[in-house]
Image (cartoon, rainbow, N blue to C red; front, side, top):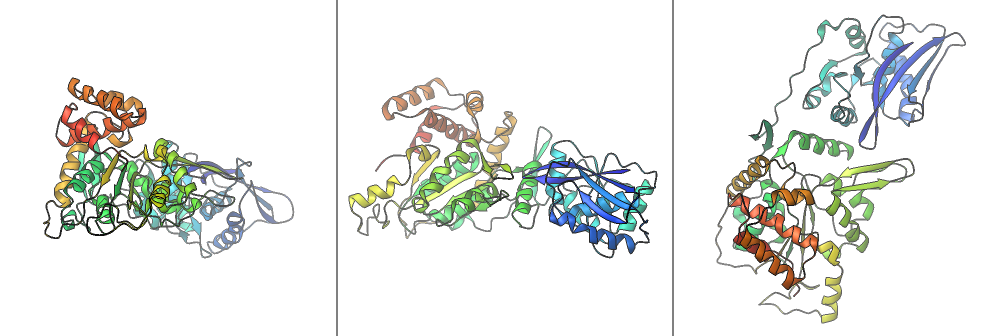
Length: 503
């Protein structure tokens, strides 16, 4: 009996699968057992054709292929190559105990790539379960970004059989270089792009808004912008993507893993994602759903980047209230009959809204057409627990016709990179905006005067415990931008100026 290793995806996590084949006496037949899905059952015909066109003669015996463990559902055409090798090498003295095998077979024996190979190998690598893998040669360019694995690229079934019999062709595939620039902090590399397709130099005036955007981006803080239509809320939100902090290799890989699960082509560029669902989007499309299998949603696809809600109060109440969990816990759990999948949702939340239904409440040149009741209902669509999870609140100024550009994205990005390096040199695993309570206590150290200011603010404004933590995190980022090791009085005062206030 011949054993080979493959794997299947269970949500986001890859589970190892032992592929074993036996030849027994009986009527000639070919069967696959072990809760194999339809894509695996169809592989029987692909495997038969591939073996026959590569000079393999089927013996007059019953061939049984078992996928173990047999109590776990398995799917994917990437099992083709492992099944074919288990049959072809049945009488060979070949040991492939530590080697995983992936690849779909063409009818002529050509080994093809599939979308599931990258997320499977990434998950196996993160779990420390894979060191060597036989994969399609055409997928080596993308797979080589996952470090620490020996990749054996093959183009055909006959080449894979020859490789298993003689490993003299084994060699380490060099990791492909990541596009862009990088900074090194304590031996770890972080990548970023100096491409500003949408530049802050196009934003005229709005100096307070640009300062708030700088602080929000430097710490990946959640931000809510309120202002009249056309004042530049969406304009600022779309430019934030290009000035966000650098990305680690794991973040880049996870970004591409999520992209593959959503059917998108991976780019492997260190550019954080920007997701902007329409306010009419359903809850399953935003958070993930599906009938029998959990599907990835917008909040997970925004992981590591920006989730932008334009026309914030117009989203459905169920979407708005469900948003509290991923904002607080940085994860979302999708439960279905056949699966439970947990997605990481450590994103920067950016929201934009008008001050009233007609949008003219804050305008000095246009008259608001809304009644007090309409304004009250509009604002009550956003609950206090939801708003309490947003650290920076910003009231936008009206457009200034004679305003001139003041700062570009490149100069803002340089300051954000410097602030990011300071955070990492302190030993932070997360950026300031995503610190937990222990991280806040460890890294958000206030001077005595700053502590007094914060205590007075708590007494005067009735701030919640979460609100106090939000002020500390924002003040920590402002101090980093000022290259200060401790949080001073002026940093706390500026952080308090970004608090939400009722009109």
